[in-house]
Image 1 (cartoon, rainbow, N blue to C red):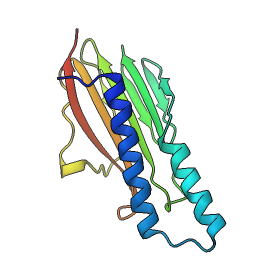
Image 2: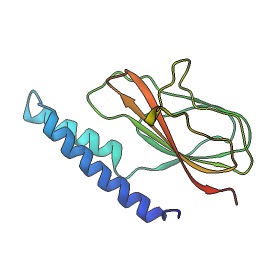
Image 3: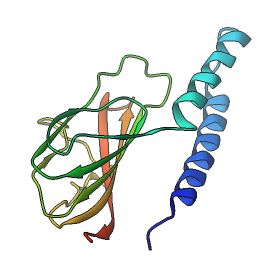
Image 4: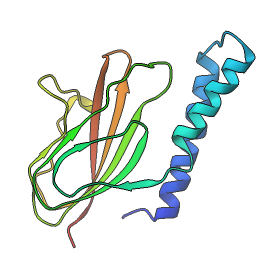
Length: 152
């Protein structure tokens, strides 16, 4: 069953609140002002997101901490941003729609990292939620994908 847009936003908001609590419990700011600025930065990067409509083919540069929609009509190569500030969370979400199967290069390079160590299967037409998260432990982006429906 596909989540409604409102349910998705509510889930994202709850996840952001949980993430803030995690940051508050693990991050020791040098000053109260720095701590407040850190929380504001986290809130701004995870709540009230605008969904960016991406190009339908070609090389697509992804923005850090973004939510995106892509209706793929041709081959796609996703290009991931460099990460320098590893104190905050870095995430990218893409709702990928393929009416027919397209070649999708997820942009992880020669040493890809996947959630559950399993490469996502994008071999069927349909809708997928792609989740990128930057891992401080691996100093690399990690990808997971969830199929959420068949092509209409």
